[in-house]
Amino acid sequence: MDKTKKARRRPTKQLLGIAGIIGFLLTWEAIPWVGIVDARFLPPASEVTLALVRDFGLAAFWLAVGETMLAWFIGLALAVLAATLLGFIIGSSAFLRGFTNSTVEFLRPIPSVALIPLAVLLFGVKMESSLMLIMYASFWQVFIQVLYGVADVDNVAMNTAKSYGLGQFARIRHVVFPTTLPYLMTGVRLAASVALILAITAELVIGSPGLGREIALAQSGGAISGMYALVLATGLIGVLVNLAMRFVERKTLSWHSSVRAEVIV
Amino acid sequence: MPSETTDKNTLPTRTTTGRTVQNDEAMLSVRGLKKVYQTDGGPIEAVRNLTFDLRAGELACLVGPSGSGKTTLLKCISGLMAPTEGQVLLDGVEVSGPPKKMAVVFQEYGRSLFPWMRVRENVELPLKNQRVPKDERDRLVNEALEAVGLSHVPKSYPWQLSGGMQQRVAIARAVAYQPEVLLMDEPFAAVDAQTRADLEDLIRTVWKKLGITVLFVTHDIDESVYLGERVIILSSSPTVIQEDLVIDLPAERDQLNTRSLPRFTELRHHVYEQIQLAKAGHRPAAAAK
Image 1 (cartoon, each protein chain N blue to C red):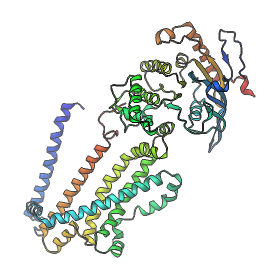
Image 2: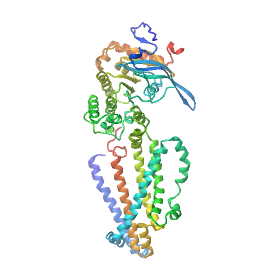
Image 3: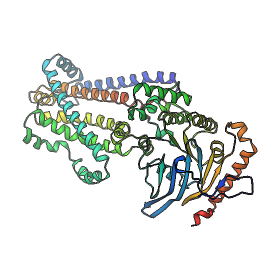
Image 4: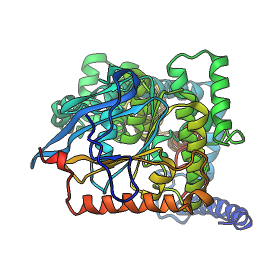
């Protein structure tokens, strides 16, 4: 695609996106106004947005955001660490792969939320409960990707490294890890979204501190537009998390064919 | 041991077994090398029996019909694969893993160069791994990039370069490593004809300048005659040596004049004939044993 065409197309695309959001908000505004849904259960968009803006000025709101994001970050970080480490170890050995395969395929589909009772039993209404659920869900996302990545190492690249005398550790560092990195980044991006979902779910259901619990409290207190405002806030956080992850991915994988601009045939 | 045969058509220096030399003269010795692959469909004998020596500073080309076990042989020599029988000696020491004194240039430059490293980092990596001090490393990398004519692109990524330039980077990496033996596995099979001619001359230049021993595997007959001081022709699989031929072309070679020499045509003709014979299943008398 030539430059001028690209430059002209981008603003159009962005404008279209903004128009879409405005359209959505207008429809939302209209629904309770026309009376399709009772305004008590679905306050108009303007009211919810106002409540959200008001939240932005409250310390309690930011405290809840902080708690949710802390659980999200710790859970995600630990899961990524564990999954990367185990993925590399298991992925590098055909024996271990075969040995763990069926167990992984059994454990992986268990929905994290099914572990809520267990988490409560173990940790009670504390952040550790959220952490356990977040870690369980995010772990598999990353682990599976790392396994694929380790298996994708190019034979010629490996032989090159060996012929230049790179030892086992140097080969992992200079060949296996960079090969796996794109897979790992995909895994982390997926896990980041899943971790956020689990963080909110845990707070909502278990009542561990954070935005999820605030939503439950707002609902039981009858602060319906406040509740919607918090839901919107979680959505915004989700968007920000995804943007941040994409940014990190672009930066670390500038050399990778999915990111780089030049294409060599 | 080599059985010199007098030839009726102006090719006095050919043998039908690999040429060997006194032990202390050989840089690289291949002795009775045999490789059998164990597959689900039973054992496959890729290489039956290969014996030859490369003197220090020699540039030898290895040609053979496709599927003649050239790559297998090279993997055994470079220590990436253990032979079933026989041995490879580098400077008198048996090769049991990739030796420090050896560098390999692979055909698939796109996969052999690491796309996550810039040109300079690619060339530098083996030296870094050997813990060569920074100053020394910088000098070696600069010289190597200079030697292959790529001093202007150290910050580029390999994939931003053309195929020929990428293979130059791989050659620079090998040169910077300061090997005594350079193995090349059909390095120019994937570049266009003009680039190929340039790269052939580059190899001759580098070889002369550094005085290293080069074993150049190719399936291109012209290339083998143009490049080599000697051409080792392999039979079809299971591989033995079909012929070991001395290339008595002048040391100064250039694409235009050397290739139009009558002697070049003769040698080329001869190698071509031998390859055709090998393809047809003809085997030298020595292999019948």
